[in-house]
View 1: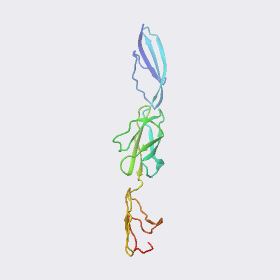
View 2: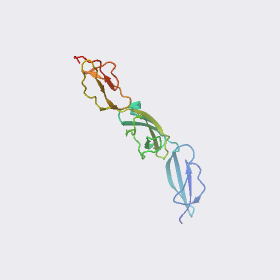
View 3: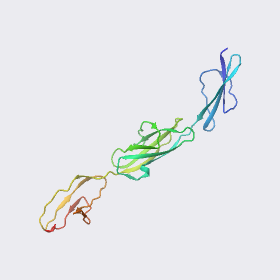
View 4: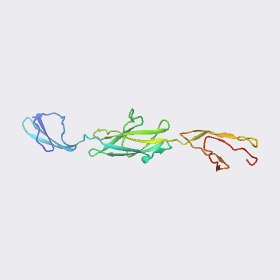
Length: 212
């Protein structure tokens, strides 16, 4: 006689009013997040009913939460290559995706499978670097961003070595060096021994003697 009407019950509650049979049905789940048991029964035109069984779906309207650290919380790094460490919490469907931003959320990386650690290469000039993290659960809820910062301080590089100099006895000799880097420190040496107070990018000797 063909199918005629259908009814639904959620969590073994009362049956819904009969409605014309259709292959799909939009249901609005209520109550707290978690597993929901949905039962459906259909009736043919002769009034015979049949249960289609119980389907279990997870209602998850709560975004996950996350935290982020860079190099285990270090304040400084002298390398652009760092390690990001993530912790997440989601009590219903679990976290499956993550994405990152290094421009304060103006742009984000393509979502990728969640992992507790990730290699990252810092971009741009030296200084404070902040990375944002968002994670998504399997119900497509995205977390609020978490952030972590680290100061990128690259090792100084000598771009111009001191030049050899010659001077007469009783005069002085001047040397200088050119470097890159943020606030480099200097220490001049003579015969591989530190010269006291010679800690700038230039050095002028005391009055020279024949011993020098």
